Image 1 (cartoon, rainbow, N blue to C red):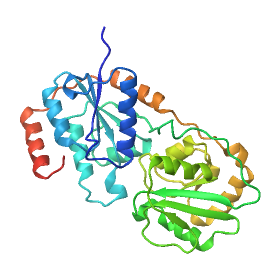
Image 2: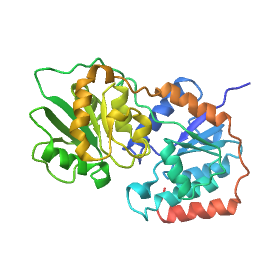
Image 3: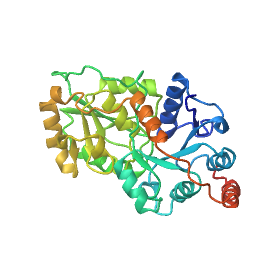
Image 4: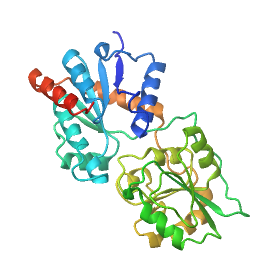
Length: 325
């Protein structure tokens, strides 16, 4: 019996940046290493596609490959994080109706929110978190420097207010900077008096900065499964995260979670006092384990009857006309 062949249908040349692109590249590479990857979606037995991207290509492949199982990896919901009328969630819903045989959610929070927004509850579903590149993000030995300030670090690739900038503003005003040094890497909506800001950087340089830090800050309010948080946890960094959305699924220790900015000093005191026991405490699956879960789920899913061809073709035309490709 020949092994099943898998394809990741995603336009990496267009969507070069972002967590989804980085993660799916790792999935594709792991499937190649296993010798079960098809470079052609029409020759694959299973096609993984991401959320709302490459919609025209996915629908076209669905029409042409009449035997493959199509698995949708869902992002978001974007309308919760971005704006209520964000059109991408409607694309996710349409792709679920027209193309998907099964759905992978990155977190239980993402699953619950997506179903509330109308994604079909009748499709087979599985929650599988992301994983980072193990060549860059693997556990390190860590120890606080008794002579220097405790180094806190956060990353943001979007300046959107929901990325937790209210917490950074509070820390900039109230944190004891004689004890703590705070560095924020990425895009920010404003300047800070005492927080150091560095521009976005490549993964290698980012890893080097994380290696030099003591505690990772994750104040973002709405995350399907933050790659930044996953990377920090895989490095073994203790984390102080906002207790909302998928953060609480990745950071399960209540001592590492806060709801109100006024809790931050006491939480940091606890993390410093118990630092050695908190290093590497959060265990998450590796990319090898995650891809195996993707495979296991795909094998459990059956190809459902295709929607009327005219409906798929019409949606292809609509997306192409609106440049939603």
